[in-house]
Image (cartoon, rainbow, N blue to C red):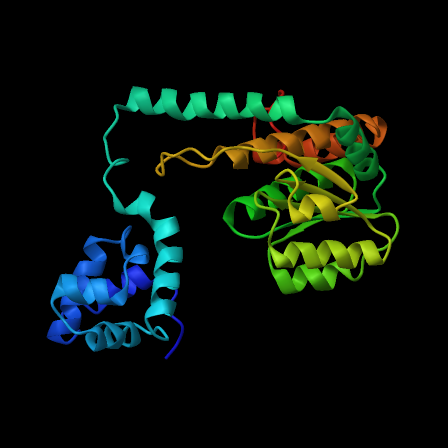
Length: 292
């Protein structure tokens, strides 16, 4: 049987398919998710008026290797699922309130991150980036991968060959082609993905400079040559987007602006060329964002 990742969803899927007595166990478990990890199989059997053997069969039916394995896997699932299972975050807010809530969170988070930034590390990072032969921005998952793409989008305009990748295999292969004069920028809010850690280690082995944008004291922070570290608490409102994504993009903008000022003539010429290439696509020749 393939390994079941979401054990709560799997129990719900099997509802009506369980044998009658095992269904009693399933109903009890789903109604008492927070307590199950503290109950013995005898206590569950007593509460559902079934035998201990039935509890064990239930564990096997949902793909676990016995009751202990079931408890461990359920506890892991519950730990990340409870905030999504209740109704506490389901209240409706007026549009005006939503605007205030979301924007206020962004402003507060940006202010918090600003206090944590180390000017010397920002300077070291901009020096490395401004003098890079080529740059690769690496991120995995939704948020970090999008920040990586924004990094490549910002830096190619400075006249530095820049690319972004979210595929772990490709990241490793690319890192193995980097050498002295090249820069890897690894982005992760957790600092734990093995893909990033491996890629940074590989690039360092061949002499590339490695920069990380990540959580304070994380594995990635400790591994990179230059580590820009910030701690950003996640909002308990599960419906609001993560503010850390925009904080990371703001930091990428800081690095891009700093690197641009270290090579002004080349950057001005590149921006002029880019803007000129877009004139035929817009009748507006006045100041506007590069690339809209």
